[in-house]
Length: 196
Image (cartoon, rainbow, N blue to C red; front, side):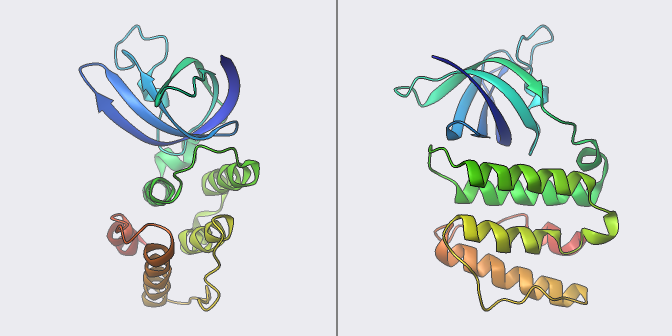
């Protein structure tokens, strides 16, 4: 069955010589995996290069509940993330957010509120003033936990120094490992702590 939906790219993995497998958090189905056959070839109908971390796409997909890997018929960019791609701090935050999303979201269920939260997070990351990026990841983690059914109530997001930001980040990461990611570490934390 063909379905039109928006989706947010959370992961891309090269597969065989010219194909890719992408994880996309879709508006219609929640988290789905898609096989992009020949997407790395010059004449590909669906190009793998469109599937960048946190890119929001308009998709026409084949949805077959019996298959683990779905297919994409058509794809186009829903809105540009140029500021994210051109700014090292925004790019680092994007990789951190995608890692958290991949570790946290497992269900293939539609959740329009969560989809809209992630979409608005991407828009904010792309448009927010550079001076306001230093605490962006902390607010994301705190707010995202609420959509997953948790609330890290005893953690204050008020920070005035890099050390305080790193301390709050460590507390939030510990909270996620205990309650959400099944003790799996968030690898990009160290890079984020260095850059911010």
